[in-house]
Amino acid sequence: MSAAAATPVLNVEDTTKSDPSDDGKPQLVVDLDLLGVGTHYKRGRLYSEDFSVLDQGRDESAIIGTELANTHLEMLCQLNIFTPTHVVRNTGIICTIGPSCQDVDTLEKLIRSGMCIARLNFSHGSHEYHAQSIARIREAVSRVPDKCVAIALDIQGLKIRTGLLKGGGSAEVELFTGNVLDLSIDEKYMEIGDEHRVFVDYPSIVVCMNVGDILYIDDGLMSAKVVEKGPTHVRTVIQNGGMLGSRKGINLPGKLVNLPAMSEKDKEDFKFGREQGVDMIFASFVRKAADIEEMRKELGEEGRDILIVSKIENEEGMRNFDEILRASDGIMVARGDLGIEIPVEKVFLAQKMMVSRCNRAGKPVIVATQMLESMVYKPRPTRAEASDVANAVLDGADCVMLSGETAKGKYPVEVVNLMHKVCLEAEAAMFHRVVFEEIRRLTPKPTNTATTAAIAAVDASFQQNAAAIVTLTTTGRTAFILAKYRPRCPIIAITRDPRTARICHLHRSIHPLIYADPLDVNDWTNDMERRFAAGIAKGKRDGYIHKGSMIVVLSGWKPGPTNTNTIRICQVEY
Image 1 (cartoon, helix red, strand yellow):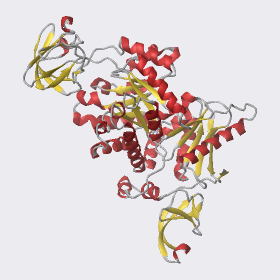
Image 2 (image 1 turned 30 degrees about the vertical axis):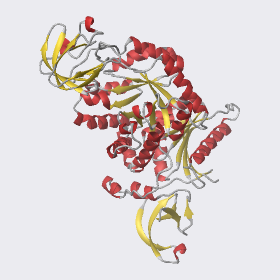
Image 3 (image 1 turned 180 degrees about the horizontal axis):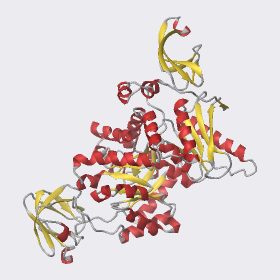
Image 4 (image 1 turned 135 degrees about the vertical axis):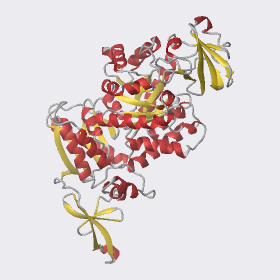
């Protein structure tokens, strides 16, 4: 590597020059004051003044067509479906582990296809089952060089549910439109429900529901209207019928539900997660910041490093979103229950609001639920589903999540491959420079040293059209700040801490590398350079760093956290 001079702002103008390779015929060329020298763009490549090719390893056409546009509309007009796909994906993919993908060979394929976080859904399965899944995930990771996978425990949370039906957990009854159904809080009906009466485990339902209110059963598949109230029951008329099984969820749109943050089962699951060394908790049905505080107390000192990602699934969570965001390590836009609790036509507004506020705060955000749902049974998604994934990326999501598609679907590997491709295309269609400028303008001043250095590094990556930003990190903090400012290029985060590497996957653009060599305490400078060289080698292996590529290096002036203040701009020489 060799240091390069500071780069001025890009200047663009159309000129007509002759290229010796074209037999002297005039060609339209774009002049760029890039890398400190006069350069030109033609046919997807950068040329110097004498028309020698710069950075032969990369096709610049997509960048020229979008990033140099003057307006968002102009950028959209420059999009081209024939532009070669980018090599590297910056959006994280979360896969739910279930019967369709629990074997080690399939898990290895998911990792190679792009899975970076494995989600365990504790609404289903025993601790023994999930312990087996965790062991298999770790075995699969050991087979894939340069890869690490975070493990997320998704707790069931407290949700209003019906009781058991006559015949046990597998029994079903049909609810016909127009029929009467009593929802009883009398425990004598807890295990003998039928098509006329079922038990409900929320005593306050007889208080909060009024005649004329609508409630939804089984994730909105059925609906009923309240026509009468009694001391121990709510009488409803089925408006939209269907097959009802045991222990199905009930949603009460617009009602403040008075439930604790965790059930006893959730507390047992927290204990299991601590013992198994999971990296993060996906907390279901979070309604207020106090719920998160209660969960942190439950995790205790032993689980202090486990991240808590709050799932926003109800109207109360939406109303208290800002306080939940402050208390959480990340947010999941859980559109399943949310689409029942609020009008379905407002779900996209909720998604855009939550993603944008997370981007402004620099906290990771996941968009989930039914992203490629039809691939549970079919080898191709609908066009609307593919567009939904792309729009989540364009909105600013750090990660997108697959649920039943990988857990129980017929095509778990194919769906990850497809999501990977959609994310690649969507990232190429983003106006990264404008996003960076907007987040920078919203950053309160004055900034601390690490933030100032990170902003400058991302700015330099745009100016230099860098192939990557390479940084060293102990806790992940430096990489997280870089990711907040949404560089177009990957962030290679080099760390000796495997846990830090794994949690980096929650943030867009971060590609973690676990550096296994021991620290050379007697020669910190050479140790740092060796780590940077390892990061560049990773970028070469992954196909986005080449001979001649420009990279931005962010580091500290001495060992230890909180010392990040040094930026170098380098060119890869070999």
